[in-house]
Length: 296
Image (cartoon, rainbow, N blue to C red; front, side, top):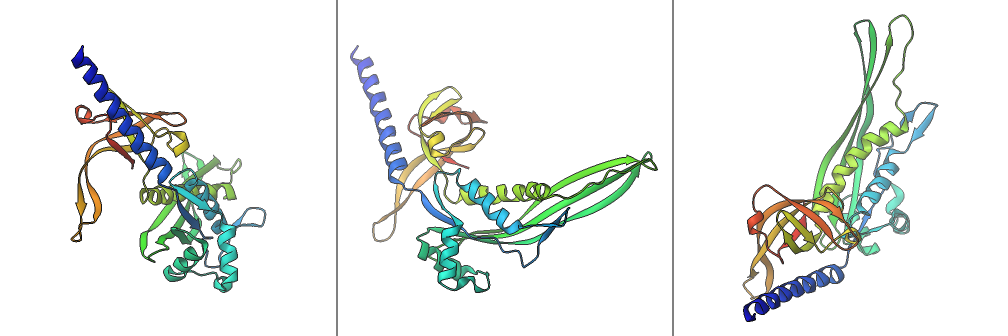
């Protein structure tokens, strides 16, 4: 009876420590403020059927804003606030930014990070072929974006890359009877742009991963203390890890902690403040209540 009581007490203590860590992490670690400027387009416009024009730079900014807003590790600042600072500080004369001016703007708006980019190209290539008497028109729509993420406090480049978004559309008809045109509408460009933007948002989110704690272990199923309110989504992948000894510098100041990865898990269901994950691959036997998790 005494041994059983000690075991129960131990589990209660572990659960309490896990809860305390999670509360400090979620409540104490305030979201990082991030801003996105309108993506430059080098003064080119995308023409769509009907004689209209599509502002692909504005579309890219709005899409990235919506994607990053899903990550509760960030507080996304509306582009209108950044635009007003650009105008007030006379940065808006040319509309062009570089790492230095981006960092200055970030400081003025009170951002931790600022993201700016350029639409390098956006267009469609048409290929016409004939298969068994059927004329086939195929369009390859490609959007190419260059993007940078700047730390406003240091002016350093946190992440930079060149990303593509590709979409293929096709249509056809029997030769001599009629033809089906494969047109390029704004929605098609949005589709290609959306693919590129999701890649950008994923890489930006990796710079500030969502973290939590394993609240309960049930075989290959884990219950995490972070859920929908913290930005967790079904299908999202996390790494389970265990913290070791603290790392100090020459002055004896704590600068980090050793982290040992255990296994990868995938979120299967999400509730308000908790989620359920399934262990992928090996490592299930090593997972313990109180282990930490970070988004991948």
